[in-house]
Image (cartoon, rainbow, N blue to C red; front, side, top):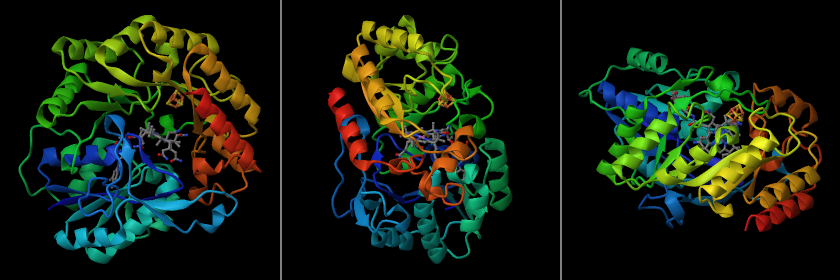
Length: 432
Ligand code: B12
Ligand code: SF4
């Protein structure tokens, strides 16, 4: 084996497979395989591992639980009345897996969120113990947003800050040349998973807006998009070869330039008569959701539709105003979506935000005939709002990424946990 791809453990109050995959890492695996690398995946979150003590419950459209082990909460979160856990395979099982694997020539470890670095660190230590000679590269959102913290925390790893394919590949080629045969396709390596409950699609990167709380522009400064033909071939690949029916878009700006991008792709899907379900957990831009776009989404099989709205009082958001938002919900309703099917993310936990503001926003969304969903705010390093959040926060956000965890309401000085729980319950009721 040339390269071992590793998806690490997660330590958090909650983690759920709401179409949560290490897409960047799996995509990188696809590019490498295309070049002739022999690649293996070690997925510490694998919910299908046959040696798990209990099989985690799977739910609709490929979503489901991860295996969960309660563990002691970090001292930093003394004030948070929730339990802490490790998500993923028990360590003994990972050790068994590692002892079965011959030493790889290179290890690629990812970390998906800044506040998930402890899981990556523990995984890294274990990998080091089993393969002391193998170089380890650390990449992903954490490494890209916090390279200095990552270098300090993982002193012997090489930290990869770029998201550019050519740069990553040429660095890997310098370290180890491929030992196998090149392949004609380079799709993400979902087929190295034990099962493929869904596949993720990324039709392009970048976003034309600049919301003050979001890192999209830092991570992907330019808008780049794949051709509808290429995307359609990828959909057919998963559909025909692997029987995948659930496809999940990770794009930041899926509907932007609909006529030349998503529109032509959906036309092909409808013409081919394939029966797939599309999901957009990462929210669509309401501004681009015209009646025609909504009809196309419905015809092509979009079942989980999510829109993003900061709250009704917009302070940090650029992407939509109330008129555009109301028109978008009306378009979806006319296209045949039921209120339950139109999820609207409301940002909860922004600096200086009153709970009453969130409550009103949720009522407004429910009145319009959609389903409010609270998205707890995570301060993202490098964004304009991060400084403001760290000025107010009760945690040292610059020094300790663990404190970016959205569940702890890091931008609240003194969270009123009872009131927060009450509001969450209220919004859950509204969205029934
Ligand atoms: C899709 C997505 C989700 C999905 C799936 C989660 C996932 N897989 O990350 C869902 C909807 C579930 C989600 C949820 C959330 N997300 Co999110 N999400 C994203 C999004 C849009 C895309 C991630 C992605 O796949 N990018 C594309 C891939 C290709 O990029 P990449 O992972 O960096 O990989 C590249 C390189 O890093 C490299 N690479 C990757 N690994 C490795 C390893 C090695 C060794 C090497 C060499 C290279 C390498 O390969 C790729 C080459 O291009 C990003 C924003 C963005 N545009 O990236 C936000 C983002 C990661 N999410 C963010 C947030 C805030 C959240 C939420 C907290 C939102 C909320 N309030 O509810 C939740 C929390 C998640 C949880 N606790 O479960 C923040 C990060 C926060 C943080 N502090 O780290 C981001 C950056 C968005 C933002 N607001 O700025 N998210
Ligand atoms: S529209 Fe979405 S992806 Fe674009 S900057 Fe705003 S929050 Fe980020």
